[in-house]
Image (cartoon, rainbow, N blue to C red; front, side, top):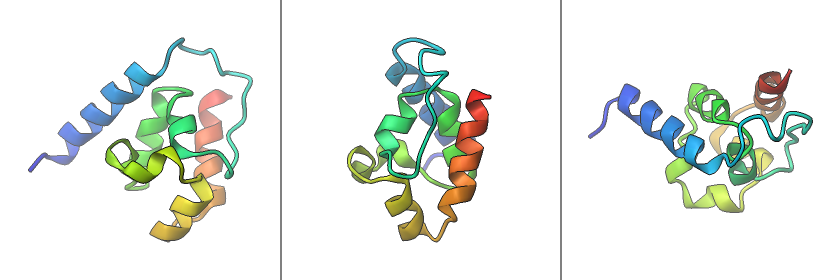
Length: 91
């Protein structure tokens, strides 16, 4: 079983690999209708924010098709709070 720090490292590493060009999406705004996979490709810091909400999206099969709103509803998380924190990355 992995420790929380190791999981965060792996999530950050994986997100870094998904991001093709650092800062490429700086003008884009995250919405609750976007999938977790779309959001994770936008910036490596996204994984840290998701992790702070105890969302381990990298290993989840639902991340490819599940919207932020659907995932938050399933996990009892306020989607507006998550979206606000994710958009703060790009300010």
